[in-house]
Image (cartoon, rainbow, N blue to C red; front, side):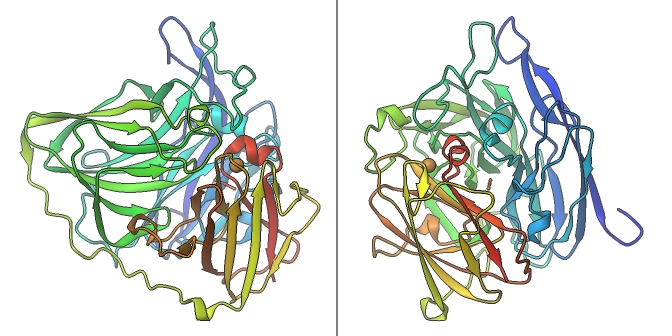
Length: 428
Ligand code: C2O
Ligand code: CU
């Protein structure tokens, strides 16, 4: 922390290697290490700065996914960091407690940079709104970055050999860079902060014995109330915070089972028939007590449809939004600061897509005219788009204006994004 109170982080993108598969050192990239990066953590009201240094042989960028911040700090394709350079964005944290993350966003290269290992969590806390949830980091509050990988015969990561339509659908699923992971649990309840850090694969997380758990948070913060369920679907970039209870001495496995992708052309071709064990929980024979999950978690006032002054339409098909591919020189939408807007988003082909908007957290108004399910009642920045359904999202654009510096909106299946399924908006 600097004298003026700014909390300063350092991230250095560098090359490394990992013993992911027997007998091979897989070449990887990481921040401050071989693979992935440190968990950054800050409180609401704090000013933060990140010194991002690029020690790779090529330019990259670092985007703060889910963060409300000025566009020139956003780390999108317009804030590239050249090899050997340092970029120092700074902003004030002004949003609810949440599990956010960071990853590169170079135009056309995001899939490769993330797949090589550049990503990490950015946790936000709000001491004034902190319900009694498990919160001892690494003890009962656990980061769970889930990623799938495919290796070639030499044990190296390949993208080229993986030509499935949305990108890599790897057969090895790892957590925080560990293959075949387990977690020793020493408390009656454990909170898992799940991030789908994969480039293309959608998961449906649950437990091997079908036990119920509490979904307490989504992308942009805690839900108004816990939602008890047996499974939660996460497409690339989405997060979920869950609390699960264990009994002394037991073993139970977090698993992803056959995610329902909606009316895609071939569920099997997009991973909809795949099941993976993700993380084994091994409970101690003596467990420290945990308080029950509170009935009320956060104040999430619904944004009313009547507040919206503008409605915009976004139709996704193959690699285009509204018939256009990403052009870094073109501004697609001009938004007015202070405005509440409804974005009507739909995917009209039969491919899996999702939709991510920079700068804002939105609420799902309705899906195909129906109210959203409980898991979509909180703040979201990324939402899976079941094909042929209309998603109406409502959001408010506040605080930052810059006619020259755009934010992005795009599909977070990274090959789709890289190949053009992205657009730009400015707030003026
Ligand atoms: Cu997580 Cu524009 O990205
Ligand atoms: Cu897509």
